[in-house]
Length: 98
Image (cartoon, rainbow, N blue to C red; front, side):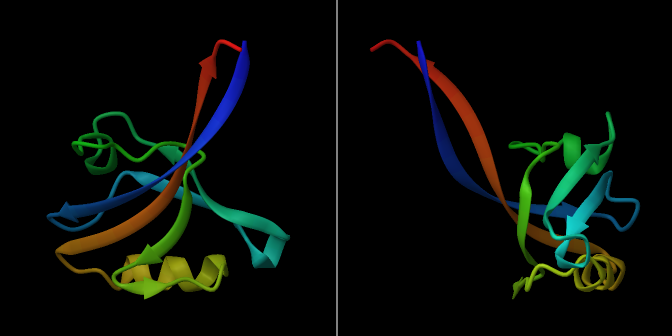
């Protein structure tokens, strides 16, 4: 078996206001990619048709393409009143036969 990484962009719209049900980690401040580090079971982010997952890289919040700074992302999330739109790059690993 070999493993192939498939990059998938997932656009999600969460409704109803905070808490949104996920935690961010990393960012340029820490020389790391900005990722979702935790998704609360039963939280809004886990109940989507395509749930957000730990390890997803956050690329857009509320139509703003992120520069990679965690503080920028947190400000955009906190500034969301009833709706949060988030786009992540999710990487799924698929085994295949050679």
